[in-house]
Image 1 (cartoon, one colour):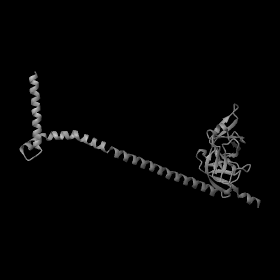
Image 2: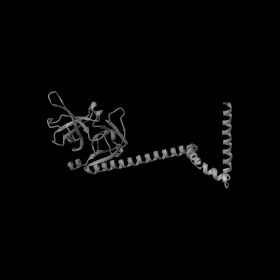
Image 3: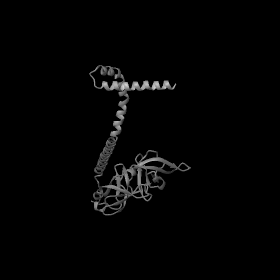
Length: 279
């Protein structure tokens, strides 16, 4: 048995040596051995190449990996920069649209003097019931002036400095707005409610004919009391609360103005029609 093993290994060794010699001889070409060897081993070379090629590509990728990482980081930064640029462009378009809407509103209120101001901050821990503007007495703003947007009434100025003003919105429990139903003309009062303010809503009460109120009713300023100009949108009735006898307790109002997305507002500083009436 030992003899057979030794003989087997000797044969294998002799074959390996022979193949090596033949292969080396084949490298020099131009001889019968080279032609014969290349003819026989050509399929082997192809098979070996198919096996080695992916390995070669992988090794090349590993060698270039650091440069790929650098390129990927560069592309990420470029994508981030493009996103910021696109966001800035969108913000610019939205701001232009808002300012155009305010300009259209301003032109529609030719009988009033108005000032455009920017919202700069909300009072901390408030439900959008108080915020600050970037303009004040230097721009002609004074206490009691009414603040609106193209979507509806916002509130009124309750404190003012040379270049700032504080606005109390219609969500504030300390304020009230005389309103009328656009559908029927019935009058009532919209005021702030602490529990409703959390959902940016307010309360409709003291309706002159509470039997006519329905969900979806649009509320406009009545102009009574001389605080708010008439016919400004205040909001829409979204719910009706009644007592056990079926009588109206109050209506839940969703303001026309979106207090969580206020950027620019219009402050009504003077009623020109009052001069005409006094002449």
